[in-house]
Length: 61
Image 1 (cartoon, rainbow, N blue to C red):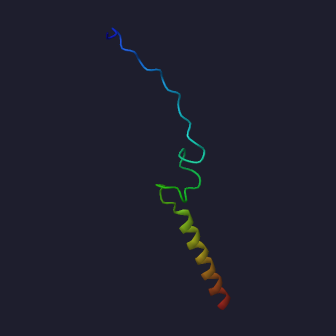
Image 2 (image 1 turned 90 degrees about the vertical axis):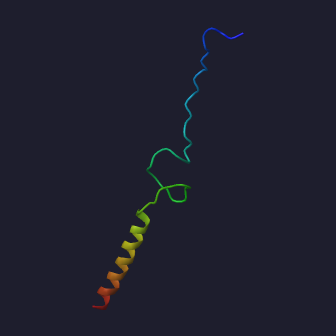
Image 3 (image 1 turned 30 degrees about the vertical axis):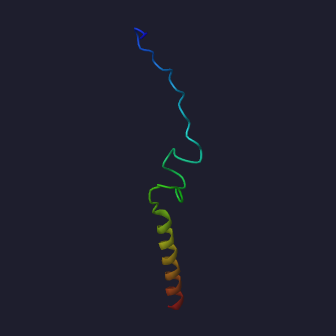
C-alpha cells in the first residue's frame, strides 16, 4: 500500500571538516594533493639568491 503523503527523510547532521584538510585557503598548502601553486617559496628562493649575489658583488668592489 502506498502512503497518501510522502515521507521526508530526517535531516542529516552537518559534517565537520577534519583539521588536517580542506577548510580555508590559508595555511601551508605544500604537499597536499590538488593544492594550488604557492608562489611564496620560489619568491623567497629568488630573494635569497639575489641577496647572496649582491653580497658577493659588494665584497669584490
